[in-house]
Length: 446
Ligand code: ATP
Ligand code: MG
Image (cartoon, rainbow, N blue to C red):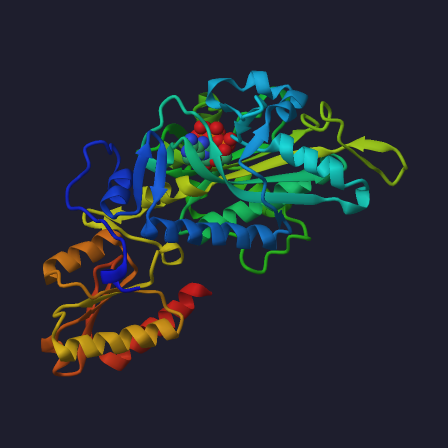
């Protein structure tokens, strides 16, 4: 992508309305634009990150056996009357009437609709377990939308739903999602800790919130430090096999949000030097809810015994748009964002230090063509901006690599390569720099 043809409205000034660093940096880096309270337009750079996050989410869920579909954002109120939630939901639900005075709502979540789809299409225990998910915009009329995409009103969520014949099956579905979540957040460069969460009236031990530690987080959390160094299940993890060991390893050490925190237990179970009290951002939640929806909505399958069984359900949410804020909270410095490789909007920023100088332009064009052809995503700063401004923009938008080409080094066939995360710079022959970038892009993609 040539910056001269791109829409990247960056700014040097800190926007007054932004209270936390991720919100400030997203606005300054030209990733989003607020169109109404808690409602954002995704500008090109922000959209690229959103798509990268979606891709990781899909990849891990598909691997775990979940199947993607897409439901509409608008739903009939009558569907929600079946579960009793239309009246219970309260002012967070955006209620709408169409021209025929039919009552609709903009979905804040989709348990009812997915149950309706399942009820109409699946009849037999042989089709189970089933796990269906979508990545779709949600609307919740939050009382206090704030912190940019961390608490929006319109936001992108991955919502998944599992269907099993009984509780034992539902536990296995839950474990598959638990492991998939560990892997997906790790691939985004995040440490997200599963913490025991409130299960509401059904009780039980099967709900976890996945929380990224950050001082700016909305929830106070209490964590056994041991969790910070636990291994993540590898590529070879077998979703058909026994995942209990992984779940136990991660779910046993103490980790709780303030809602369910038990101070006495924390002190008893965790040695003082391992006790950590901090704040965190909820990026996902998994939940087993049994027959909460299948009972009122009469959703059954025929079992091997020939009888009808109410299905046992679970739901699994990921805050796709919120994750961008969480990643920036976890990965930035005083100059801007530092994207983890796999979610970076581009892999390389190519900086032409003397736009209009024939040799420099030619060298940049050749590098741009070659990298792009090899599948490396390059943002090429071919604008007339002065060098200082170009460097500041590159640091602000945080691409993993900066490839800097100027007339002086070029006379000796050299270019400069800078790693954004460490600030390390190397002056290298053009071919060496190119080979290094190709190799690294290949490594990052695998
Ligand atoms: P919160 O407690 O933060 O309000 P929630 O528990 O109500 O969230 P869930 O129903 O569990 O949210 O939704 C699944 C995921 O969607 C959450 O884990 C979170 O990452 C994301 N999410 C929820 N509300 C918002 C919001 N207003 N803006 C952005 N992301 C959100
Ligand atoms: Mg939640």
